[in-house]
Length: 302
Image (tube, rainbow, N blue to C red; front, side, top):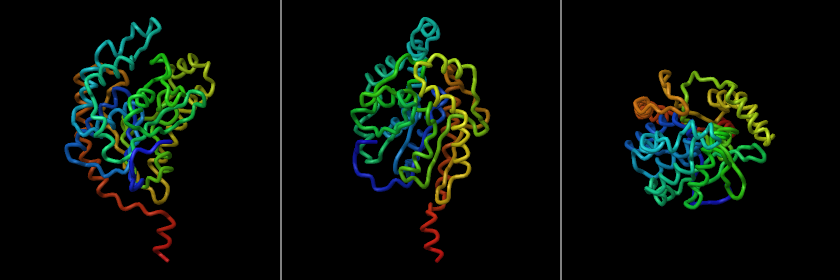
């Protein structure tokens, strides 16, 4: 957050989009519906991992950009290859994906920044294991989105941002509600990639990943607390502090797409679930009462 790409009138209203690899096809559909309805009441945006990619596509102003990536790039073996992974290569080849997508002028970069509304991308610094928000600009957009989507172990490397190795933003802070509040947000829409009933668990995959990354003790320490941090942010979303209102948007309970799903039919179904859910999300946002800080509230009543 060291650079400034245009004037910002307010930081009151924020849109946060969670990552989730192929599960994020849900937010791709929801954001496409927002585009169709010309719905953009937000002052700034925060995206993590695939959520950042979907937000960039939304801000570019053209429907179908993210869906194109999910159906025409992410399903190809050049991107996800289990045999390559077992031989010591990437499971998800972000180098190939970004080269292929950006070679086709996937995003209208100037259009994204014409709005004068900041886009922040969540990353995890390798050395400290801490979460950071990096403000996107025309020159760093691809680099920070790549860093934010670089799942530890599944992508064999740590992309650099400002000369510092980074990894998947979801490791340290998958849903940066607290960071949005620190930036001034008092009305927040959170778009998740799991149904509302989901509770994070510490699985054997997480334990194996930590073991493989034991050379990075601070990152591993952060990963050990993912379940606790997820529970804390869910509590914050359900019970925000006075003066803050949160609209929590989640896929329906029958949303069953996995992180590395390769079922084209299910991905299309998940996209349309997001597209349909957007109507309720817009209604709930319009029904929000103006956020009032406790200090202003007490001043009005005196």
